[in-house]
Image (cartoon, one colour):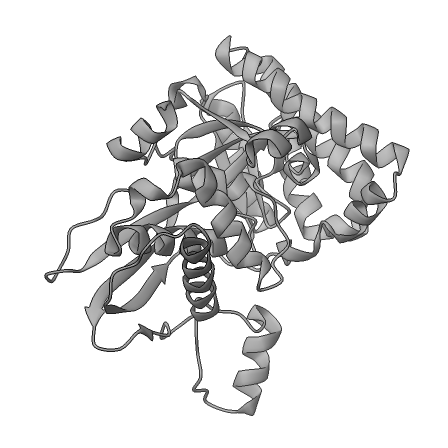
Length: 359
């Protein structure tokens, strides 16, 4: 997430990418393991410019406050909800300030204006909200020159804390993938979380990944409400949920070995098993008919498929190669879904960040 070229003196700009949960999700919320990676297909950027007052600038499209009519306003809310990026930028500023205060990290004087851009599809399970927060956090770290004082492993927790303040239900997986970039194996075992205060995050070579495809709908379901029922049952000690989530976590462990050995047939089986276990735990009503249709469309041509997150988009793998990919594209076109090859982003960590991890 290196700073991009600046248009004016003192201007800082950072970009964070959409992410795909390859294996193990949603066990990151349940002391499990996951494998995830960032994709270059979609991203969000945040721009910080020094200014006299501290200003959070609304986006002209995503933070609408002017409408053609009452009908336009209501239609907008029905499709997009009471959302936008301003609340995300305000939340990370709040969390960042509190963290620095708690850790006695002195912040220099000076104000700024924050603005953002994003092309990550909304409610598609691609971590669009956390991408904005992640990019903003990087801007704050550089503006205040405290990057070396905020450990890389802690940054995903700060991003998640900002989102939780807004009622966004999620786990650490997405934020780790966006902070680190590239392909990352993550272990969120209770032992690690209690002892370290964070999970164990191990970057992997992105070249281990086979060609993958992204399938998504233009009008996806809301991915922010999926964890509710299952989490309650897990907390209540439901044996089926607990054992199933442990199986999902083991899929990530087995997947790490499959990737390392380039065992793509095993990878395909693990991807399918991951979704099947999710379906048994959450049920079709929670997953949503459109999301299930995306999976079934991919599987109709023999592709392995699972959700990238909690719904709204699917990651598909065609182990038989280009001819099968063509079948997938045709099937998605017929079903009305968008499909495109996944562009995997390499690690975005700066040298200073890498040195911090190796310590």
